[in-house]
Amino acid sequence: MPKYFFHTILQKTILLYALSMANIGFIGLGVMGEPMCSHLIDKGDKLFVYTRTKAKASKLIEKGATYLDNPKEVAKNSDIVFTIVGYPKDVYEVYLGKDGLADGAKNGQLFCDMTTTKPTLEIEISHELSLKGARLVDAPVSGGDVGARNGTLSIMCGGEKEDIDKLMPFFSALGKNVCHMGPVGSGQHTKMSNQIVIAGTMAGVSEALVYGASAGLDLNKMVACISKGAAGCWTLDNLAPRVISGNYNPGFMVDHFIKDMSIVLEESEKMGLSLPSLALTKQLYVAIQAQGMGKNGTQALVKALESLSGKEVL
Image 1 (cartoon, rainbow, N blue to C red):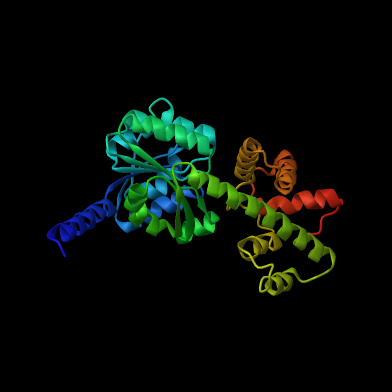
Image 2 (spheres, rainbow, N blue to C red; image 1 turned 45 degrees about the vertical axis):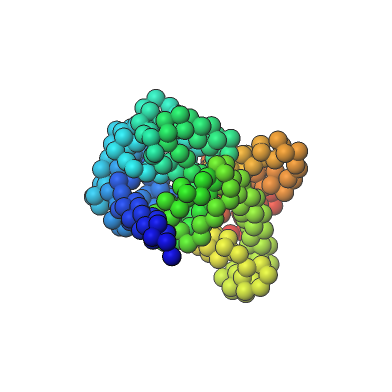
């Protein structure tokens, strides 16, 4: 084979090795972000972190992360920056607000937004970063707090293949399934499809639990039985046991799920689509949010069904 072939392979190998031990920025240290950032520290990267509440960074600082005062400083100190925050307004503020990432962006720098947010916002951010010679990959994740802690997330990417290839050493520390779906914004559209399925399965599992409890079934046995058949799904395996034990702590918060469903419905309206099942599930979640359960996990949907039935069964 020609010499240049081996030279190109060697260059790519050196680049990937260098990136795999890089200065990494990480913004957003909540239920998902904190364990994800921890995995990157364990991998050997130097982490520069920012979160609005510095106390949330304490464990990571103890592990060796450096806390900086704003996103701009994170960008200035990092080769690659990851973000996973709450809402579209937070994404906008982190990237395009005062002292945001765009203010500190450098030519050739790579940013990866792992928040679930609006596809159009990612395209806008990508354009603004490109004016500095920087690039964006949108890479929302699925798998909840369990996947974040275990490094088994599913990662849905939109962006240039070259950029996603550069991120693979980091993605491999965070997840087990990485999909390149197309240009910037495609990762978010894929995540919207994921959330449509999650809404449906969460509603189905919640109704099954309420029904089974009312019928006098042993719910642990019921779940073990039906999970081995066509009803088997991640929600049944991971969230049904939490409901049975009365654990409504968030792996993924009701507030954030309502945000996601709102984005899906907004995007589907632009496409001229009707998604009645999703719209109904969103209204059930809005009902429990109004009852003060917005910070609970999505498994709290059973409480909406109990309210509709006029009795507590779980």
